Image (cartoon, rainbow, N blue to C red; front, top):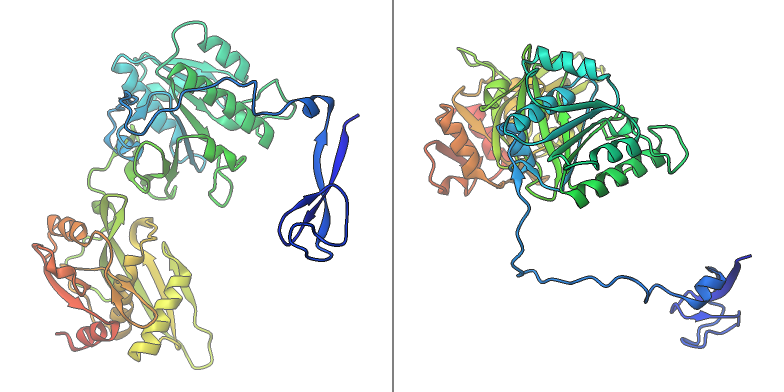
Length: 457
């Protein structure tokens, strides 16, 4: 039977002793030795350690001339943008999203395009029968694509089948929560089964040079179900987002070892499947013939892509004594509270007797701190009933002192706005020094901006 080795560790200096004593020999501190559970001693571990007996491997330098893995472009530009250029040979990609958002549809379209290019593609479905996948492919007009299709849930059966001949260039597993490994006990979808199944599939992909795509379920809070270590095991994590009541879908790169993170691809769900949106700003801008109060345009930045969205605000006066409500859709409610506090404390505007409603048009979600100034402009416009010019954009970060701070990639935001016909911009001080086709009005503090809006300069 294995014997537990006792040891005593000094809490002051970390010295280890085989028995307890009042004073530490190393640091001379008193009563600092505490018993600590040591390693289990077995006859094998007593004679061996991990410093010998292994297989030596070769270490290479950063400047070594090694051929980089090739990419396979899917032909879907928005998907390639999120991936960083396409699927990498021997990589593992995890894509998650709400049920019915279009994950299987997108992957079916991508596999069909790759198969039409002459690459061998295998699509393994664990949730649907093969006939159901064929029906969807026919509805999407992809019934003639040479995609190898199967319905299976056993990882051993999948790897045995794929290992008989030349491995496919792309393998899609839909979904990883339905797979099970007979090496361990547990029902499919449990933490141990998801981890073990993903590990075996990723090992196969790395050894055989197959690009692996795993479809993952999500929990009710939007995170990918299963063990968190699953996201660390794969090379790329994509999140497919969007409201089912809206037409658009956003494919967001959360992690990417072969490209940049925070890149997005924008799609629209149509009867023939997912179509690419080359100009996402057209989805999130409201076309209006006349100016309205409480609406302003903000150039959000998603990775390297600027997306113009409309921020809408509404204030409603309440009777004295009533508790005002704060409702936010598409933005951080805590940041709205901060902007309202700065407007009251630094600029003398009172929102304490008003209900405040803030909305990002089109169901888009904004996390860019550069949206502070655009939100403040919408709030000031709604409170004072002063419309913001329809050909104007605004961006900038607001500090608690009321200072408007510069943000990253200001020139990129201005270029995108000019491309869409905007002529004016409200920006932090120093941004206008960059060459731009827009007429930039700079402000250093929020109080200066409030005075500008209320005087209609």
